[in-house]
Image 1 (spheres, rainbow, N blue to C red):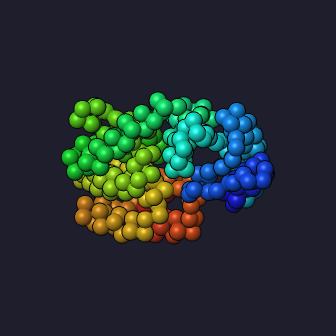
Image 2: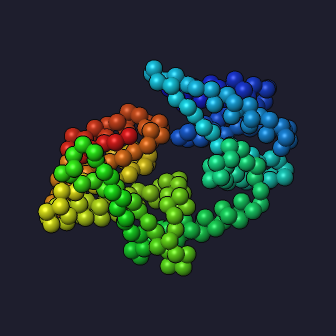
Image 3: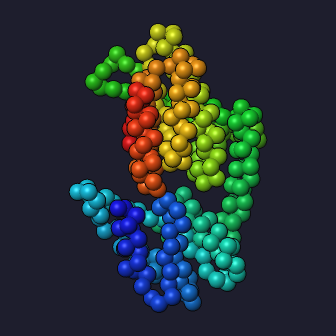
Length: 270
């Protein structure tokens, strides 16, 4: 329902003959505006932002939506369709990073994009080289002080760059699908640590974040079962946290997997 409403609002704004609105996947849309200048694209982006900022009512709930828009224009920012789309994508992520709403592509963003691609190449080796680490953030319950809760957060100690913030590598890991390898590493370490704490007599519960790609992975529940059994960890000691956006692409499949995890005894938080 959410994506249908977004598409309807985009189509209402982008209504010139020849203009095109297409969904790329997830909550990402591409808009083609033939014979449009940077100024014209900025004007269209402002209209889109205004259309999406109006509250939506979905299943009786009011939802506020924020958009990040990247702009690339022919021929200033590229002459090939693939180049323009890539540069618009780079500008969009710069808009997200800077919380700027709308950003026009600049060559310096392209250099930063190359740096990120290099970082992603290193990330593919990070698991094998044991460069990832987990930190545990305490979660305090005001109702039940007998139980102790922590959230497992992954960090990356790059051999030359030092500590790399999650915001710098998690989004790109999700885009490429490598997030699944990272998630399996996190699951293994966090479940093992929870079991170790319990063996020492500490009543710990551990929360683990899972991404949209993880939620869609049909093998995830079976892998969780295997890890729980191998480490001697009870399912009720583990919670999985997901964002609402993780349910957008394929709600039926996502809910099926979450139901399977919940049936094991794991807690689910959205």
